Length: 362
Image 1 (cartoon, rainbow, N blue to C red):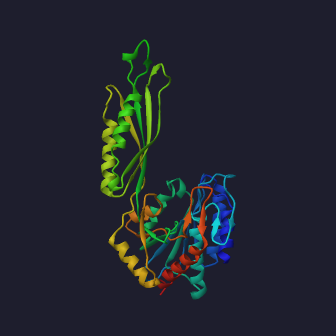
Image 2 (image 1 turned 45 degrees about the vertical axis):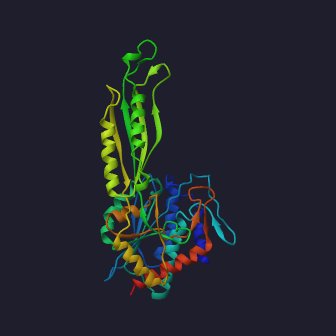
Image 3 (image 1 turned 135 degrees about the horizontal axis):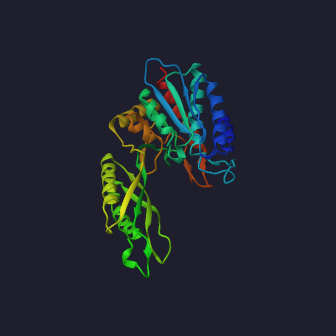
């Protein structure tokens, strides 16, 4: 399995999102391999993060397909950079999230090129900042999304090779509360306690969670105050929201504004900052119809699942592109030093993607 040798080459390169040199080094390998298959290369150069890379082919009549992946991983230099394998698994940073998925896509493209001596109507977009929220690359994603009918995303598969049809949306916000400092012993009543205000807001925020609807609000960090003998003049809440529908997103955003602008402690003032990083990926009928089509094409029963985590699939789905995620190999313990991927799932996924893409080359 030569493609595992290619996987080893890029896994051994540290490609932490903030390690521009490392991410770009991974891109050099992927670029070399894709140019060998006749792709044209467009680079979106960046100064502080790795470059984003779009590989394109000749366009003719038929569905336009985008393969989507990312070259960055979550591990800073000198924390997890090994590659090893046994009879069943491959171990290393990115083997399932998602250098392994990129190799699945690459090998399927190689199979098509070997058979047809050309590839058309298939592009491949590899970003460099997915693990940190795609704050930069999502602007490009939204711009190019209109060029495609279908987006296939190579994040890790489910345990039984499920594909992903829905992902929660996610947003990160902070609320800064301003009060008034005073001596807690001599001038207690002259102070305006921002920490006290933040405590009320925190309870209101957490109460927005609705597990039945897949909605969660997590106040992950609280900061405020100066010392035990000073009424706190400031406090700050850092929070994340996740939601499974547009309706829930709207409910959360409206309540965030209301909670922020309500002064539970007289005299306090508060300010809200933040944004929706990735909108919700909602399962839809066009997507399900496409999966039925894939079942006929590949002669495979396809299982589906919904995930609470986000990926760049959220972006293309929100742009009304038919999007299927989870097309990489099956893996375990991603984002930890135990990350591993099942060898047999590579073969299964490569076969599945090869059959799928070959069908659309007709």
